[in-house]
Image (tube, rainbow, N blue to C red; front, side, top):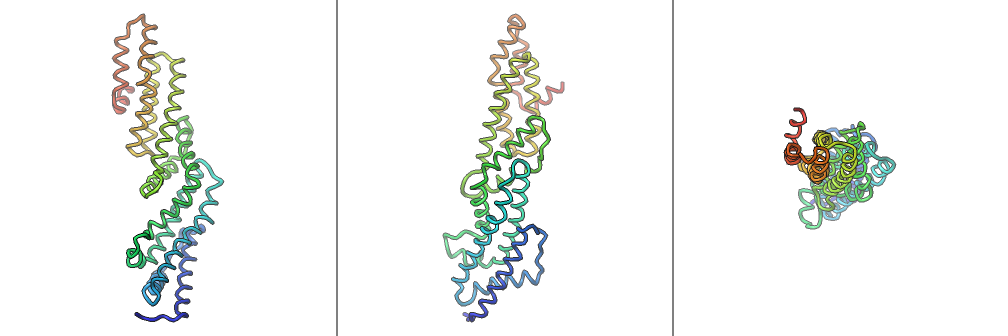
Amino acid sequence: MMEVDCTEQDIRKMIFEEAIRKTKKIMEGHPETKFTTEEYQRFHQCAYELSAFSGSQDNSMWIYERFKNTLEESVISIVLPSLRDKCDAPLLRELILMWSNYRLMARWLCRFFEYLDRYFIPEYMTLGSLNEISINCFRDLVFRELYSKFRAAAISLINQERMGLYIDRDALKNALLFFMEINEYKGVSYYEDFERTMLEETATYYSQLTQQMLLSDSSEDYIQKACWCLNQEKGRASYYLPDSTQFKLIEVVRWQLLNQTVDRLIEKQKILNSGMVTDFQEMLSKYAGMTLKEESSATRQ
């Protein structure tokens, strides 16, 4: 193997640190940071020579640990402070911005140090790839502390739109896509937790609304309003929820508004019509059992 004296090692480590300093500018608010072909080749060659020559095992582990430390430093000093004082849509927008910048920074570092992924890391069963390390670092440091705030912000936006307020749908959609992306890796199932909590709060909301509507509306008016609510939920959910979650959401809403109120609605109509409820029962059964697409067609007739 080719021997490298101490001075050359020091020079290469100085070049290595230069690569890290410039890459960290992305996290410091300069996502437009670019690397010339000459810079990329120089940084890539530096990492290769540190890993491939004398003392390569020690140098490779040093690069690996330096990579991890750089990511952790960026999250602790930049990402977390930028998120802690925000809520609702501003919090979700900042989360996506920080994640985007972080991933860009991590991708450049992974490209510079790809020698580790190809030759060093495969020799150690306990070491994750550079990409895995970058995702785990963000998830473990950011979501461990702030996930409950992210979940609350997302559900708050859903509730606000349900109440007729304007919301930043793109921020909500991007945040939920991010939940699913993070959820693909080992650890807490963040999206499933969000989904479960969102469905529970939806059930509570429509349970309360059902009681109000039963007291104030006729049975026929109640059904029309219930179907309107179902179609509104479907329209909103189709923008920012995946199909599987949309289905669960609509089933929760349908159950609260129609399925569990059938008997009360029929009794209410009996009192109004002196026991004659055949036509109403047929209409109620049709609405309670049809698909949402069919409901939408029925309410337009």
